Length: 270
Image (cartoon, rainbow, N blue to C red):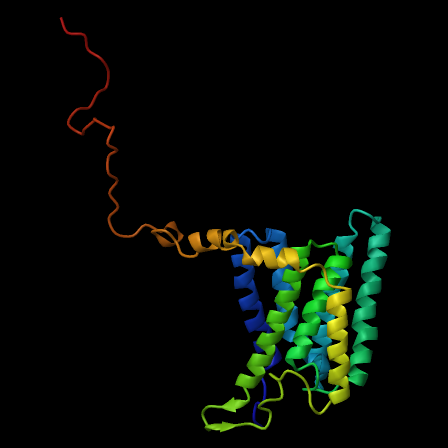
């Protein structure tokens, strides 16, 4: 049987690797704290497996919703950590986990078709806006951080779609499989009504729920944002401070001492 798409492990590995590298770059550029690096990494990783919420395969979908339920449950707890008691936070974690893992899972399993609307660029934009809105309103993230979460989700999402298209091309057999074009599309023509509804929801989400985009645009349009990243993009001199070759330290200009004159004390001549 031919392999028509990238498998779950490939999506997970590539999305998590790319997200991790870019998140570290964001920390160097001063856009993220170490804690936010982990958040952005998780957002990109989840985005990398998110298109498979409409999958016909039970195990990957169950893993996806298990990861989603745990991640959203912890994000809910973190956002209310200074407000609720331990018992209330525990109840919140359990409720969010059960709702996502079981209720949302059954809804998506019933009403979605694999390689349908969720395998599209429109869906990636929708989840970008949804993640940014959730991060800002539900989890009390700053405007810039909320948009970054959305961007990382969309990044992982697009990586998933691109991998599916790459796997649709059989290089060894020099042919294109039937699945080509079903992932990296803007919208689903076969599901026109669903695509139209998703498009309306995406526009409404942007204007009604997402945080102001001005701060985010200003941050990424500023040269200062990239100055530190440019300065530290490559190591200056030795990699990882590992010595190699013969290293000779030159004496400073103000140092008049030499190896020929070794002073151990002062002697008063008569």
